[in-house]
Image 1: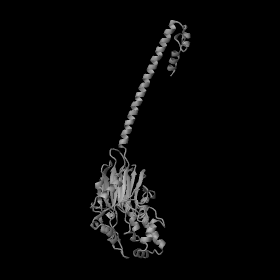
Image 2: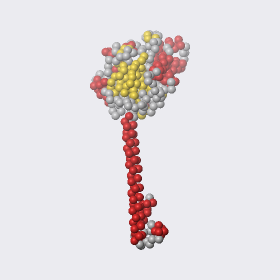
Image 3: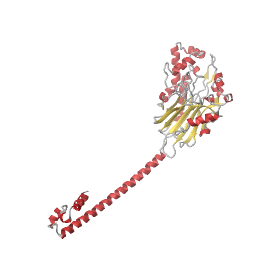
Image 4: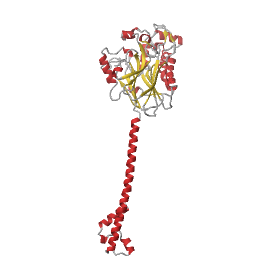
Amino acid sequence: QARLQLLRASAKAPLGRAIWPARLLGLLGVRLGSLACRREMQMARCETLNALANDLREVDKVLQGTKQQHDGLKGALEKFIEVMPKPLTVVTLNLQYFSSYPKDEKKARDKLKEALGGPNPPDVICVQEGLASKDVLKEIGFKLMICAGKAGIAQSVREMVYSDAAALKACPEQYHDELLCNQLYLREGSEWEVEDQGAERIASNMVLDGGGSRVKGPLAIRSMCWLKLRWPGASTPAAFVMCTHITGGRFEDQYYIQQLAEERARQPEKCIDIFKKRKGARDDDVGILVGDFNATETYKVGGPMSGYFKFGIASSEGVKSDAEKAGLTSPEAIEDAFKVYMVSPFKAIEAQDWTFAYGEEVGISSGFGHLIDHMALSRKVPVKKAEIIFLTNQKTKDAAEDTDLVITDHNAVKVSFAI
């Protein structure tokens, strides 16, 4: 900067009247108008120009080095973005053993394609109450990875509904003796890679007492299917996605006093235990327990679950008989026991320090006005988005339609996780 200022000052003044070298020339005893003075000034200007050129060359070297650093940083950032995992998008979907599935399979396929497609399609679909013999997701670009029925951990529709006449009447007869099961699908083209998979039984061998028009026999089989997934080409944690359907629902709720609260608590505990004992575990792996819990996370007296109890459970002769045997003499005590039964899976999960990906804010997943389809996490993971996919309409009187084509009695829930 000093050299530039000096050069500008000399350029503005005539050679004979230059003011910037006056002190220097005065010390040398040289007259400003003399030829010697002019030569001195020309030499000084040349030296200044040469010095300035050297300075500019040094600046250019610095700028070139900075550009190379910038280009290198940009390239590294682009490579990092390429290998950085995209969100893992998971859907939970209860197909209700195809009892509500449209007879027009093309319309049903188009509906599922629309619901499970779009700009953010799921990587993984967790199916409950599917049939081992019927694959409707293959046609819309999803590959069946694990099926509890094919793994030998399933029972027929007839056995799972305890031969309930009304349930069997609603289900197409050709499906009555087909295996009802949990399944896991991976989207064709998903960049998440499956490293391992499996299926486990999670229900006990307990036997239910009959009475009051209820059947007597073993508790229906419950299973959990799992996939271990990882983003390719990156040292990232694995996602351990588990699909299950916990004991409960209108067929088993009438036995709730027969220690079914403990059974409902043990089943998610067993799922979590399987996650803890996984092969090649890392501390930052993520367990995602997905499925139909047959209950809302909280139980409010006067709320939807309480209304269900008073309408469909409390009047059961079998429930009254069980309550008398258990010494539950008041209506309040009988409902309190039902409350414990309903929330027991959530209490068990929370006791393991797992958390839930979403709550009531996401909406309703059951056709009866409840959020009963959930996703629990082994550790905190950012949820990019959680949303309901409407595949059913509410069964309450005068409720507005959510979909023009009913697929099942559940809505699906889709969640994107930043793992």
